[in-house]
Length: 484
Ligand code: NAD
Image 1: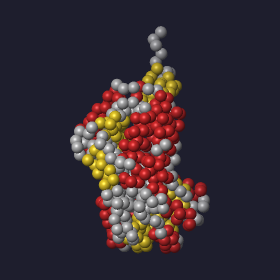
Image 2: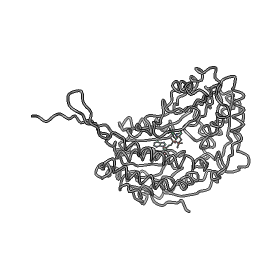
Image 3: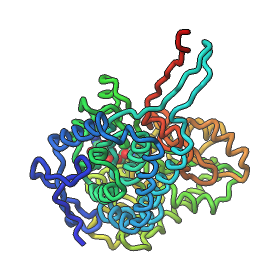
Image 4: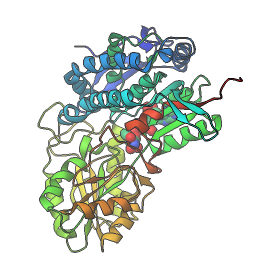
């Protein structure tokens, strides 16, 4: 089966690109080209925004009832559910996520989002009448925010496309999606499903391209709101542009989350949990628990056990179901992760397992060795900066208050966990940590609840009614009685 494409998805149909530039999708495992697709240009973005603008200003979609839009998204849900295996394989092929992770999360989690948003949209107060304080009632309407620019990253590409497209569609918006150049393929599979689901002309465009094309989309005067997931550096830039133009913006950015291991925690369960949560998606996860905080007394023993578990994980071909850690998405990312492993050693952290070289037996592909540092000082760069690879730092704390202080000593505030036999004690820790999401004895996103970052981890929320509200503008209509 070829994954090549020769058209872009503009205005809901397959269109000839404005230029003949090509994006080569390179397998992070074989380093060979696995697909060629058109590279979107600024002219393609202009065409997509024009279509979205027309569809929003004149088309049926924003004027349909929420129930009619729910029906179309319900169709999408059914069609998407039938494509889970294909979606998982495409994502693992384009960006190297282990197929075990793609089948567990990359492909099915977006479907769970669709289902959760459908339930939320059915209950959402699209138009409600409230008693005012001035004697008459007020009608409060939640109207679509307009044309949305959706910009996802490569690490969880379909997840971050649908986290924007689904609430935007349900709210009555039109959308231009710009997938990352590393991961154009999953978006085009979605495009086929959108057509089949009956999304009207002009409502969704998908144009993969680089950051210049992304920035052109962000600045475009035809765009009303930008929904971005990616690095904090790009998020700051996009936020600044939107601030200047007074565009609505939501930003899901980086993280450096802390797992706090309390002294009463079941050590084996915590280590089993961290084998997944610390290095999931080969460590390329914004919510990865990359700082492991352990009491000073238990530090050495816990770090040794963690290192032995992480060091034993199977690294290799992402399409092998036994693989637990795949390659990094690109050579630049492999080099970046290796440079942090070097920095950690230079900073004086104790390398327990892993290191800069390639994993044994893998002489090609952008692989790194799963790495655990112990004796890390939270001020070190490996504890402060997002590495985005399978590299964990074990940090000692003096008491629980110290653990919370260390967890909070970060520019980020995206996620976090606490591991304890006492749920109430865990909740007390959760109350003290300044992050948008938290887990006691595990970490997961529940799409009924909001997800997002404190501090430099972002602005706004995805999922839950809060996430749907980000695609609406509130309008108040005061109902004065007609003159007698
Ligand atoms: P990135 O910021 O380099 O790119 C993300 C997307 O934005 C890509 O599509 C890219 O082409 C585009 N882009 C980059 N600069 C842009 C600009 N100035 N204007 C418009 N578009 C621009 O990030 P990445 O390397 O693709 O992804 C990894 C980052 O994403 C990590 O920092 C990770 O933590 C973060 N992330 C956050 C979440 C979350 O929900 N908080 C989820 C996944 C990934």
